Length: 224
Image (tube, rainbow, N blue to C red):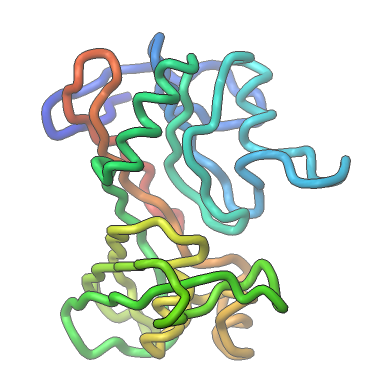
């Protein structure tokens, strides 16, 4: 199997299946494909202990989550194999040197070919964990998007977040007027019933490899 990057091609064989999907492993990093309806890290309580991190640690006990995806969002994630690597990639996130591409299917026909949403966000405290747009108290949240095509009554889009606020893509798409299919927080009754899962998938992630700084991209194709 081959994982393509901008500057290099990694040729690899996934480790034996153990209830998780590690698609690439070297001595510095792990790249995992998180399924939908699975936490990135453990939640509160024994019933929330099952997560991507615990699954991967069955094979790689040293694995450390670098960033998170919402429970209902699927897709590609980076895991570090040491604290030094965790610091390296964590700093790349802080300095916005990591870029991610998401694929989403939206309710309705988006008429424009592309656009940028720049609307600050904060937690909607009385309704946690819901988030909301707030121009007075919110933190910067920027999402670029591109229309990939119309599929029946829906629109498939590429989402390119420039910031990483909680539920940013879900809130911005709802504010645009086209909620993501299967979104139980920000959608309406029809868009929720249109799919049995949240139609949001992290397809690509690009960052500088901690070994030597080369720019690498890993992809997990969209499953819907």
